[in-house]
Length: 173
Image 1 (spheres, rainbow, N blue to C red):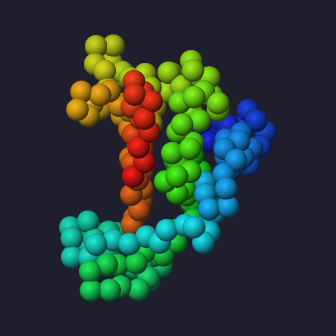
Image 2: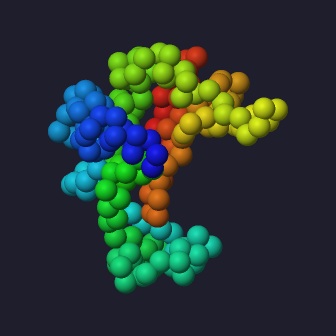
Image 3: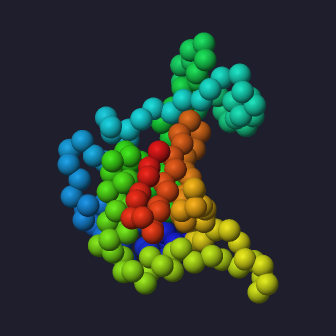
């Protein structure tokens, strides 16, 4: 939220307009690819597995008439929620487009190498205690390979982006 407010203040542009102009438009996506802040024909529908602890908790915390759609024996459809493209969420993308975005970041076509490295620096709680995450990325290791990953999603959606900088590999699920 703070970052989106800073972007708007410094650029003098609406956050979503700034992101489109300075990031999304530079990716040159084709007609079957999408990154943005609006529901389209390419946007997945959200579902939640029924009869699970998460489904139970979610169902008592939200207004079911507002947020629940149809249901089947095993799945609950969740209606489209528009978050107005604010910095902590509200974006939509397909996996191919997210992969392209991450590759462009890793190749320093959207931000400088120094800025990218700053985003991967571990944060500190105190002078003597370091966190396992950065400004939006977590540090990990898979089969001995260093990685940075970011989970995302909301009710009915799930995503994980993982970058293996030493191998130049990006994985989006």
